[in-house]
Amino acid sequence: MIELEPNLKIRKNIILIGFMGSGKTSVGEKLARARHYRFLDTDQILEEEFGCSIREYFEKKGEEEFRRQETNLMRWLSLSLRGSVLSTGGGLPLREENRSLLRETGVVIYLKASEETTIARLRGDTTRPLLAGEDLSEKVHRLLNERRPIYERAAHYTLETDKKSFYEIIKEIQTVVVF
Ligand code: S3P
Image (cartoon, helix red, strand yellow):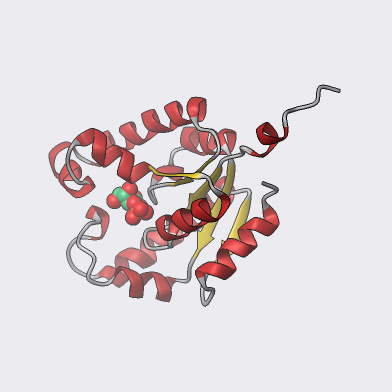
């Protein structure tokens, strides 16, 4: 059997998926720091590439073009990402190709929050184009119901986050992923 250099064995990527406001970025940053991994966020990478915010990009080019850019980015990351924690935009797992790319790229963890928690966290947010305008609760209710089964299908592991501290969430991730 070929012996791998120990460091090579552990440079697995951890990928966080989930609805807007589920804590992907905050958990991802803390997890990366704890494991001395690099932290990346698909929304942040795309905003840098676009040279504008995601909200502005939606206004200028529309959602379909944004989704195309997400897939291009995932294709690139699936080839190049090593030893990183990647947090992803909430709509990224919706495309089937993206779900395959996510699972090829690392261990996919779905951060699942209840509808009430999600609504409370997103109230007053002005950065997410899909939630702009009236009736946040109705939008979150509809989108969550559509997306939950998709997130569950995309993930290797679903982690309930309600009433858990960052410390507890990170500890749980470390029990399911062998670093
Ligand atoms: C989206 C989620 C956002 C961002 C965009 C679309 C979605 O990311 O990619 O506004 O479709 O759920 P966050 O989940 O980081 O808010």
